Length: 415
Ligand SMILES: C[S@@+](CC[C@H](N)C(=O)[O-])C[C@H]1O[C@@H](n2cnc3c(N)ncnc32)[C@H](O)[C@@H]1O
Image (cartoon, rainbow, N blue to C red; front, top):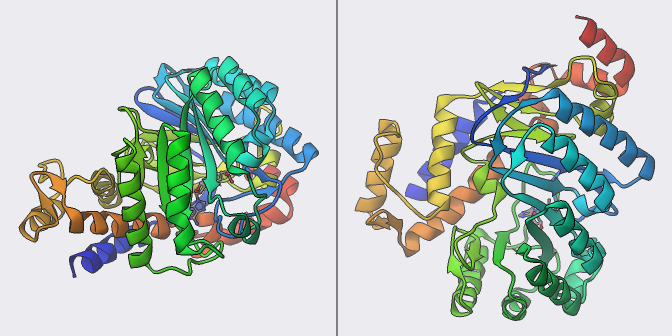
């Protein structure tokens, strides 16, 4: 009852978001912000993945890199940014030189405290890891998902021998690179019985952190999970016990780590302002949230240093922001009755205490199931304009721009 009611309140607050495709407000960042760079290329598309990507082509990559440099240089950023993160897509389709050149552009504006990158393990090498460390990366995250060949192939991925993952993680240790491994539960052709042995194998490889993702159906953009919420949760809890026995501490609803650090871009993105660069990247700053257009329109509008960029612009609402802060607290497995929350949310936190979901500010066993469900709901119901035209007031203008990027952009820029 509590779970259903809160899921409904969150969905409602997110559904009120609308966007307009128009000239974006200037991106200005000064204190306490992050940077996300979207690398929208993959060699093949995975059945479960809803994130925006295009099949890799060398010429498109070159066009993208030029546009990305122009976009970064156009932003007004100063000081130190708390984190810089390359996600995808498959960021390791970029060469070390290409990454170094992007970092040089970023560093001409700001000094990032930590620099992370998502890696597709089947194409990652030890030499590549050395290159990353040399140019200043501090963290890597590998999407292993499963060690089962049959599961990986059924999901459109190249199988990766566990030994390869182990060697990469050992190399990370030698280089002082902090490492995360993503594993998924509930994907195509995945027998639940293989999930726990996969997690056992992983513990012997000693990544700094393990993230256990339930397969989520995000914006209907990919497969939906064959496994119920309750089954996914039960597997995550059992896998968590294995990780805790191996010396990991639970850091969040799906995250288990060694030491104090935590690497979790979706958690960071729930509260701080951040600048998103690259096609479909999301930014929040000032009163705005802004989503960049897809590759073609993106490359066209950043093909030179002039011109005014277009994007999907929404106004931040206080209610959605408060729910995002609440979601982040729950994600961290905590529940406090804080005066900084509006009465509705504070009352809700008090109710969590009274009904045994939380005790002394921490979520209890049944509170963790609540956290699992709430986090899934937040991720699954965030209104994302690219796959969700009905949240865009003037989607036809975007389609016109997509159909004829050059002319539409010139017309819009001239307005
Ligand atoms: C953007 S993805 C891709 C990273 C890299 N290209 C790779 O394939 O390994 C980053 C992570 O998101 C997670 N992910 C992707 N689709 C998901 C879904 N539908 N539900 C939950 N997690 C998902 C996966 O664990 C994946 O490692």
